[in-house]
Length: 206
Figure 1 (cartoon, rainbow, N blue to C red):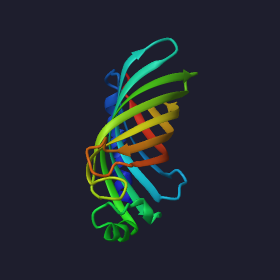
Figure 2 (cartoon, rainbow, N blue to C red; figure 1 turned 30 degrees about the vertical axis):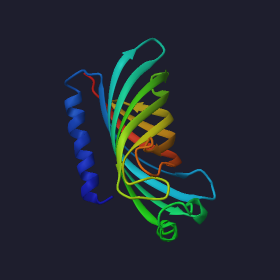
Figure 3 (cartoon, one colour; figure 1 turned 135 degrees about the vertical axis):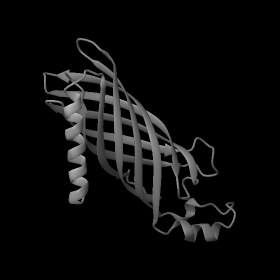
């Protein structure tokens, strides 16, 4: 990341921090970066890294738990390659040409709007852990043997661990992700990946 981008991020958080001291809200905003890869298999490879903007809203807080909804716009950069040419069946139109095409290493860009629900368990005043489930529509710009180009869905199940300092919260989140198009395209085998992401967010407080 360039110095200019780092400065912009620091400045943004500084401004938000000043505003946060003047209002009380159940909202929290942040950003995260993550990466991952497919589960080991003999059919294909898929590696990815991604960036998310995050907007949290606390629905309810009880003595032991907090309940949040989460909106996360995401851009995901993937690399995919078919390993098993026989995955493309002879009944597929132009299957020989498709095998040659799909066995090339491809860059896959995904644009996602994740909508999630989170249950958080505070551990003392600083730490917490949580479970998160999300689903969201997405657009993928590249056709592969596993999924058609265009509209699809991303499903994520994650656990997370956070540490809070003042109004800031640092987040580590391992997750499992499934991407498919629910049969809306001609190819719908989809991708399954294991990921981990790191984030920072700001709470609005008086």
